[in-house]
Image 1 (cartoon, helix red, strand yellow):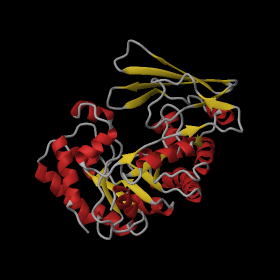
Image 2: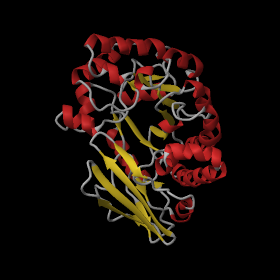
Image 3: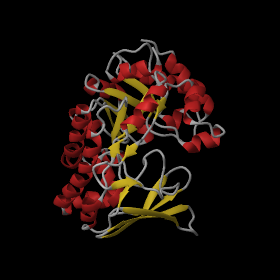
Length: 388
């Protein structure tokens, strides 16, 4: 099988020629620190992993008076989470560095006829975080709902990349997120914009406001998701770690997460797309709840050693006949600071616990930053020895 055939067979809960093995994105910190700045595709080739390419390509709606932001630069463009930004006369964006800070700090401002919204992000080379949330007052969501631009998939550009990539591997992206620091899931997007703890408190103090906020974010995501028809993606990501039971209760998941993300999965399927629901953190209490939303795959199945609660064997027993499982490997303990033998044994355990009957793709349980190249090589090599 080609890498693409192997992974798609697993996504469709079939049995491939061997265990598919890959990773969830490639962190620039790792490649710059340990691999002399090689590209993502060189990374996959070097280690012999099943490759993935991540073209996140958006376009403005020709029927609306909106256009690509001509001023978008490296301060406001990550190239991973965020694509080309769409602006209008009533939704303009500026980004400026803030000097004299311990970390790289950027203030983003959205200008609208109803007022301005600001967000401040910091970056330490490993990751980014919010120091000033975009939504500070409850009425701010009315500004977002009234003026936020829509986002459509640039199908032609995606398909050109898919044609060029061919059988090399998966073409993967995510449901659109908010500018600057959003994520694919509605709840996760709202947490990024308002603050996780604050949003949880509002589910008790003002649940109707939270529902209104989620509806505004979902509306934009639905427009994008419906525009995916004809785009030759192999997999699109939805969800986020703030939906895990490490952060919220199963009751909050049922009321504030599933009702907003499930319709996006339905819309994606209607557009001919597959969805992987991404939850880094604890998920065992909500396994069936996530599966009931209808995704084609689930990730990351974070083990206890990575701050999750996953029992891979038990997860496979409970939902393995409904979704493809991706992840489950403890990258914190078995890609750094251990022996090659321990890494190989960890691969075999994952295969033994989740590989039976196919429908499983081995991958670290989310990103890694520090890792030993020798252990990544052992991880990939041992997975190739896991033959069905």
